[in-house]
Length: 359
Image (cartoon, rainbow, N blue to C red; front, side, top):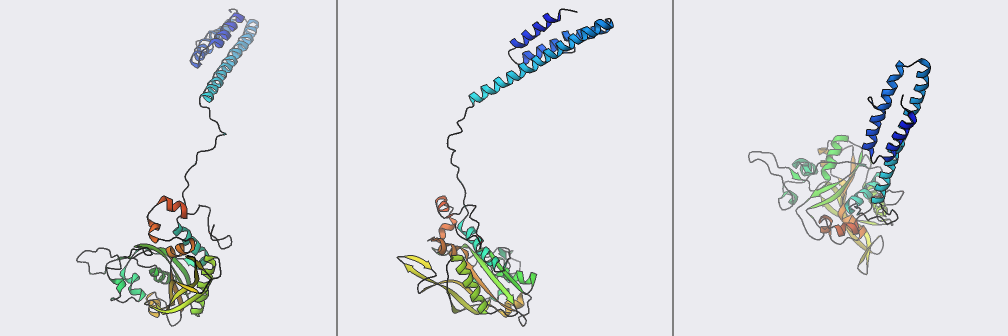
């Protein structure tokens, strides 16, 4: 057996002088590898007398553990030094203010649609949906709109192309959300109480009209529903939506799908060019409504001798303009980021009846 103290000193010195982990690995193999110096000495123990083998084996195990510990400590030290160097090179002052990040906003149409839905949901109305591309039957025939009605002409409605030899009437981009009430009654029957928010299309474009806009349809069918129920429902809705008591005025009108029909005005005033809802002696027209026509009930599979009810349609975009002072409808769809940041809502502005509808 060689002098173990000299062997220990040699390897500890080499470990201390190692420049990197590759050099440490070479030292480990030279000392502790399968053909390492200490490993070969461990193999020689078998040829020694028992007493000498026991003494030499204990000393070799101590040396082996000491060198292994020194290798591990040196490797950990190198890793710590490398981390310190990296932290010094990648230093960042965390006390500096963060970089501002642009945050998106909720479009006023989406916000107002949520507000309206929250109010009617509190009144017990469910939400119904339907396709935006509708058949001639659901968009016109089932709603008692006669073939000669102006709405069925190309200057007012977007018609979908059909093959020249197809005898069926072309589909249309729905001109109102009223077809949803037909689909809802066909699917659920009566009694029923639903609203149908959605996108609609008409060939119109100016400061207060757009070829694509948004409506919400309301429908309530029961055995004893009357115009009085309609008036109460709308006054409760407008008072909740504008967050002030709002009176309504009904004016006789005509719609093919309701009888009797009424245009609905809300109380308002103009003060220094500013519209104020719920005060003054002025009136502003906001929606059409009436009792559902018996022919519409029959088209939806509901017996008009047993059931009756009211329907109404409100323009979502116009409600947004009135409540939030937006002057031009065309800006709703121009994707101007400045406009969206000004009129948009934060993601946390979730409207609820109990928690408040506006920020």
